[in-house]
Length: 116
Image 1 (cartoon, rainbow, N blue to C red):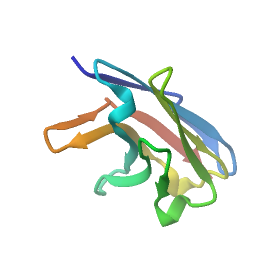
Image 2: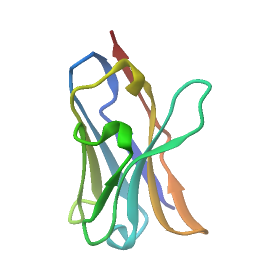
Image 3: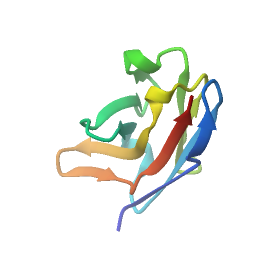
């Protein structure tokens, strides 16, 4: 049974930082692309950042230069370091593990709230 468990969300003032973590179990972590998505109220879920098995990364334009995704294959974890947070970053953040269409898993989400 695959489980992705996010942690690290919370309330922070604009300009502050948070570090999200996602602990994965029940899958061969090292072969999955790991992603962070977010969904704000009334908006569609969007990709924030992704990291491939080789370590290459991609980011949404809105977070480039502020967010950093990293993975630790030995610990089956992926992190999202979020700096210079803005109120527009307020959303539920979801961890995603993707291999192919039928091997695509989601965490339960963690709330990030940035106050102005």
